[in-house]
Image 1 (cartoon, rainbow, N blue to C red):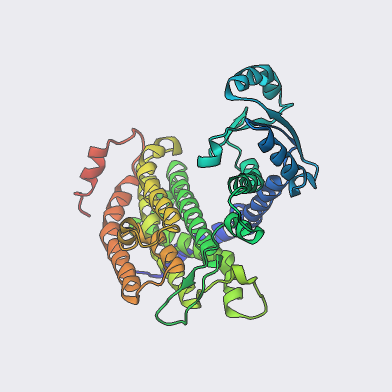
Image 2: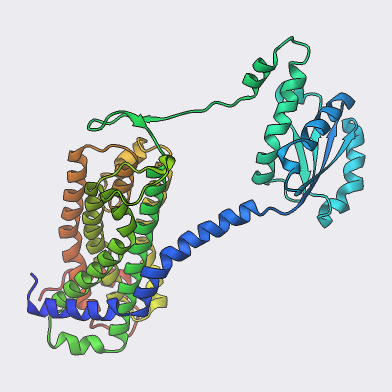
Length: 420
């Protein structure tokens, strides 16, 4: 029960955490660092180094076709690609590779593309390089190379230019979202981007807040501050106050992080491009925050319990890993679920206590989730609090005043039998 002593502990926690440099840094600068990092990554992908490519085919006519196409393609406009063309069979290619091996290793030659005659049937092309797995290069070469192969394949088949252009085109797959409440509309990638942001923020906040709770408990225990505090409040009141204080701090931080999204969906002042339109409401945000608050109490009770067992962070690492796995595994499920939100694993994890704290908000962002599932998720996680909190409280009451030798897990189990 929250009384004036618990409120005093909550006030102390809020004063320490809200005014700390860590809170200010993580709240304000972290989103800037995160989105700045994404921007730098995109910039680096665009700012490619100059590539020198040797293209080898087994047919003089095919070599001439590739030369004509590549030298007139968009690849030559920015001056970052240089091509040399050769005609030789596979046996001669071996000697050519031996001759160019040192040039490849030195980086003077980026790679050798070998297009055998069999590529006219199976489109299998070989690429030799010091860094053969270069998705940026293969993605940019794919279109002109594929165009030449298609033109050569249909050269003697009396096809018109219009038919050839149709054969070159890929499939433009447009998705339309069907929901119970809203009309059918073309799906944008906004919700997919939003689901990744939600999963990252939930993962980061739970992990960061939990570790701060762990360090705080260990520090108070090792400095003997807790012995002074316990003279005024009971261990149960101290643990409750610390958990609620840390949870309120994390909730304030999450609201600040989500404020741009809240502004976008609640006002018309910020217009997103059509392809980035998001189809979520304030009810999604409220569910995320409520579910997050329940998750904070759950995880903070576990981290606080673990901090009371050990006297230093080094010893606490062994006990912290199981709790961290309870955060990491749902995070990986949530990220993989973005591709297939209706998979059996996603359906089970979205209702599984503790796991659903991270998985269900992400699922509700990607697909339409029935109201009863959202309510069940909240009920099951709340019930888990009433199951875990008494156990964590018993261990905390014994461990917080215990110092000296690192306890064995069998001893920790015996603490649950102590009566007060």
